[in-house]
Length: 256
Ligand code: ADP
Ligand code: MG
Image (cartoon, rainbow, N blue to C red; front, top):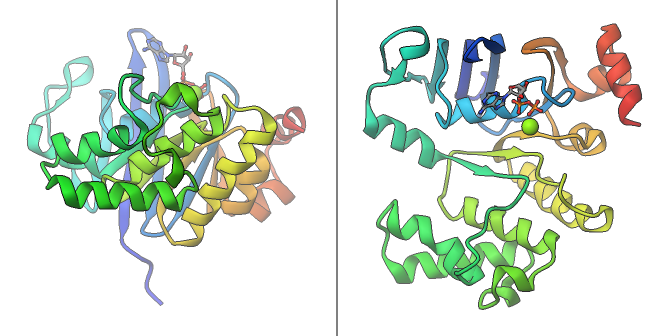
């Protein structure tokens, strides 16, 4: 059987903030249907890597490919930028991000939040977008909250609204940055359940998480970052069951 095609490929990526080298040559591939989890201590570069994927951050060296198509760059080193604005928009709208802090717009209802980007960025027809938005809100279990304001929802409900908003862009892949970190433990589980459902559906996802149980349950591949380099990676059972690096063993101990 042939492997599904890659949706995202990161090759030898280098990223620095001024003199601070955050990513020192990282390779990550997510094929269609893959769930890849990024784990590692705070400051190891997980969020930076995720933000580089959808070009929210510049990077100085290496390549980022979306469905086999390399990002076009101009300039070098700290001057390097993507050169094709249409390509950037295409990639960004196809890699929907879900953040730790939900980032819902407080002045819009939940339904308006979910509809906003498909309407304004993709220019899709309103009735079609509304039907899709209501469908995704049902899917994440908050169909009855469509007309509510974000402040009226619990953290877990707000994060599920943020996931519905990401889904409503019909992206090729979802990128999650610590989606459960801001939630109380009992609310965490309702978000984990939604992520598990999405994984079971065969969605392509890259998930930065501190939740080792979720990473073990949902991932096809787990990447352990340490100080901007991949220290160890592999299938979850192997990585969590028989970690070889001392650093990973230490990290896993610190999380339990
Ligand atoms: P993680 O998500 O693994 O906790 P980050 O990718 O957020 O790590 O950060 C990696 C390193 O980059 C940290 O040392 C952090 O302080 C630094 N960093 C992150 N964002 C910026 C920024 N915008 N400017 C300068 N330094 C940053
Ligand atoms: Mg982070």
